[in-house]
Image 1 (cartoon, one colour):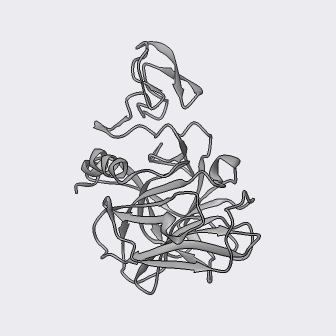
Image 2 (tube, rainbow, N blue to C red):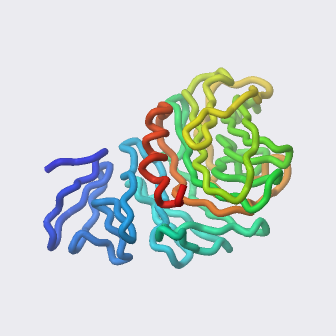
Length: 275
């Protein structure tokens, strides 16, 4: 039976097992009880990219209500929503609105969310409410002084930062890029090649590489597998901060994507945001 990135694209229309990245899930009439068509990756009439075969986390906005956003990477890394509210794009995609006060999504620590030397990619769609403020996006840097691994965040100095952390060396390697204006959905991606050079970190906005400057401190040998949770919309690097923006389709992939792959994802999903 044919597959796309490990996702079966043909199932018995009455009752069939569905396998995504090696995880079997029971479906009835091709639908989960939430109304999300997992096998065709179609939501409210809109089709978008299935999860990459190396996905560690993929939150496509399901079910669009309640306090849990479900992970479709096959790793069971569901997110617990605190404060953030479900909203919908004009094209029917559910996303989360963060108010900048105390909203966040917490994904409990798991080995599948740590990347020692194998590289990684973070992707998230962002619609900012205000410019030049600290808006954490995807963070496994929860305490500011321990259990830190990686962070993708806007800072109040008009920059977008991405860096990876070595807990033993208390050092990090990364890059930063210029901020961008609020009011429009943009796809932000950050990649790391698993190495020790600042140049191994890259930032893309709408599939265009935008990072301009190295950002590093102290020694760096490798990222370590630490115990911190992954947070969406909250960070404590320096000071505690909460995002004031709308966030959609966050994902973490356990390899460095090429720019052509990032562009392909954006092209498959941009219609969901009207851009």
